[in-house]
Structures are given as structure tokens and as C-alpha cells.
Image (cartoon, rainbow, N blue to C red):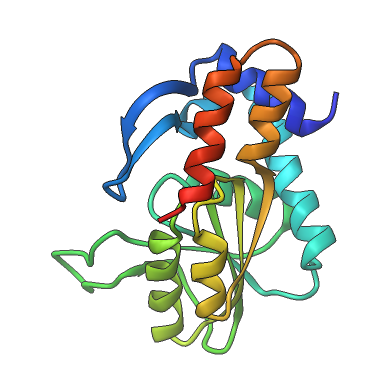
Length: 203
């Protein structure tokens, strides 16, 4: 079973992918919700996810083409940490807001000026949180050309990031996930159509 099919069935069985009416952090309503924070509680699937991230980075960027990994706050951190461990790459992460004490910094860890940084997040929707993190890294001397996510919801993130000269790479796309679920009888046609409509609307 390939990773996309594996993750598709797992997401439904674990209730990490739910269908209904949900309000996203972006303020948009959606016919489905993905919560990848549950994945690390299932080591076998988490291990597969980290391996899939690593393969995507290796094949679509190249391990010798960047210097650092950076987590987008905050759900990307558990993935970025594991990928950094597996690849031997230094890790930094962006805070949601500056520390209210000590150094008041927005980035945790040591970032060398001029370093090429790959951003890591779990799910991409509009791309706004990734863009904010990219700007923080750039404002602190880093170079960002790529962002990698486990799942792309196909709602404008790729296009938005492209405007900021960042290429979005995803392990899986939501249209592939729901197509697999529909084909194996785990998703009704009405729900499939609702998800496709969500993708078409984007904004």
C-alpha cells in the first residue's frame, strides 16, 4: 500500500479527517477538517509520515541543496524535529509571537545568516501561516525557496507562496485522498462533490 492510500484510510479510521461543516483558522467554512496532531500518537503511521516527508525533500529539493529546516508554528514542529533528526539537518522554529521576556526573539535556535532554509508544516490551506514564517526567517537573514507539507488542501497556498518566491511541495493532496476513499467505499459521492467544490472555490 502506498503512503497516500495508507494515510487516507488511517485519517478516517482515527477520526483525524472528519466530514461535516467546520470553521478553519483562516475563517473559511469547510466540508472537512484535518487534524494531523493525532498522528504522533500512532508511531507506525507517524514513522511512515516522516519517511514520506524525507523522501519528498530528497527527491524534489535535494538534501545537499539546503542548510536548515524550520517549523511553521506550531503544528509543524513535531514533524520538523523528526525530519531534522533523520536528515541530520539543523532545526530552528518560528514562534507565534515574540517572547515577552529575555531576548524577545521570534526564532528559536541558531540561524546562520545567508543559510538556505526549508519550511515544514503539516497542512497547507491558504498559505498565510507559512508566508508569515517565511518573512520572519528572511527578516533574520535566512533564504527560503521551498516549503514542504504533508497534505495540501489545494485552496490557494501554492499560488500564494509562489508570489513570495516559495515553491510548495506536498506529500499528498486532498483530491487524491478523497478519490482513494471514494474508490474503496469509505466516502459518499455527495461528500466527494462537496470537497471538490471547496477546492474549486479556493478563496
